[in-house]
Length: 147
Image (cartoon, rainbow, N blue to C red; front, side):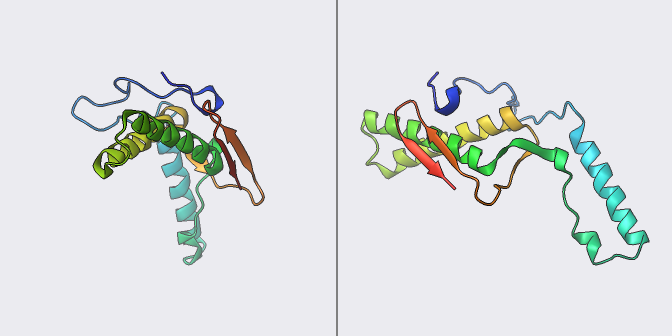
C-alpha cells in the first residue's frame, strides 16, 4: 500500500463492503438513518400542526449526522489520491494518452470514495467554517494550502 497524507494508505484489492453483484453495501450499524428519518418526520409534523407551512420545507439535518471532518479535510485526501495516481501514470508513460489519463483520474476518484465510505460511512462532512484553513503535505513532498 502507498502512504498518503496523514499516514493513510491507498486501498488495494477488493473493497470489504463491495457487493458480489456490484455496488457498495452501506451498513448502518448505529441505526442512524432510521433516527434521522424519525427526527425529520417529527419536526415536519410539528411544523404542519403549528401552521408553519413555509418553514416545513426549511428543515435542517440533525448535527449528529455529520462526520468529524470538514470538506477541507476531504479535499486534502482527494488531492493526495489524485497526485499519487497521476504520478503513477507519469512513471508508466501513459499521461499523454487522454484515455489512459482518464482511467487514472477515475481510479483516484474511486479511491477517494473508498476512503469516504470507510471513514465516514453514511455521515456527510461538515461545511467549512468561515476562515478555516488547512495544510497538507503528501509523502512525496507536495504541499496543499486550503481556505
